[in-house]
Length: 395
Ligand code: FEO
Image (tube, rainbow, N blue to C red; front, side):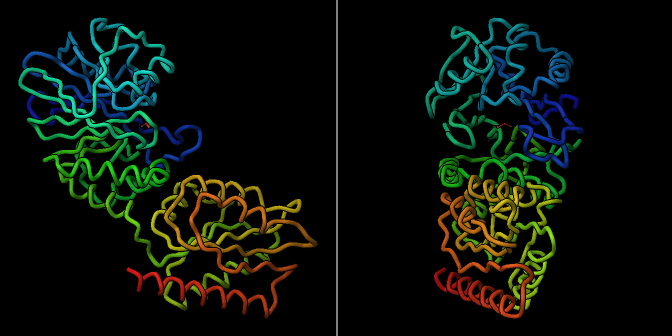
């Protein structure tokens, strides 16, 4: 990605990673990603806001070279994760007098993770300003975007917010600015779902904090820049709100067809009741898609056969994920089957401790489901309908 001017003296100097398909060896990236870094040339000082993943170090260096940057005074670090901080050591090698500007928590993490010496740092307080001459940076602490040390940087004169991961999207694109809002919405929602959802209440507070700022541009560290901030701000307001939709997510596995028949019956029963239902066959699903479905759903129904007396391992993995992501889901149930015994139900419900859910009576079947079992699934669908209707009345 070439260096591109956003406003006079403000440049995007990061890199596009078209090929990356996995983040943290866990999170699928179907559309690649970008590592956005921004250079701000003030009247007196020059600051680099975040760097890039070390695999893209050369691109950052080349962009700085093309812009004729021979002195960087400050490296502003909003977040210590290496996809943004990993190239700091290289920058410091080329600009040994540059100061790494961040909060004390982030400083400690950078010293531990990247072995940056203490003498290289300037620490800033929440709300502190740093002048570059005719441009002023304000730092806003925003712990737990998904790590404990995160902060946001606001360029006052140009009204640009640099929020690092927050408001970003894993989307490799040549577009500097958001062009296709529907596409970016999906990528941004996936990103929120996969890493930020467990910190929903923290993010609510961050949104309140930035309400007072006049923001013309949001320049995140992944994906395209927002020239219409309300689009992404409204999306986040919606995702972090306490409101859920009348949707049921069904992560499931079936080994010999019994659980599959139960899921099929329940899906139809819910559709007949005009409830949106999203089944995910866990032997095939992209866990990012599953995480996205968790963002708005009122109910999760986990469906599993019994393997070695417990749930299928793919179900364990999905339940672990749901519990770790802490979606705002209100109700849960379990359906599934067993051959001769086991503790599949107890093990699944025992893994949902983080979710503040009301458990709706499960439907667990021995062998192939029969007439009475299908009636039980109809009763489950009725109960879900009733619970969702009650929620709407509360709102
Ligand atoms: Fe894009 Fe949390 O790093």
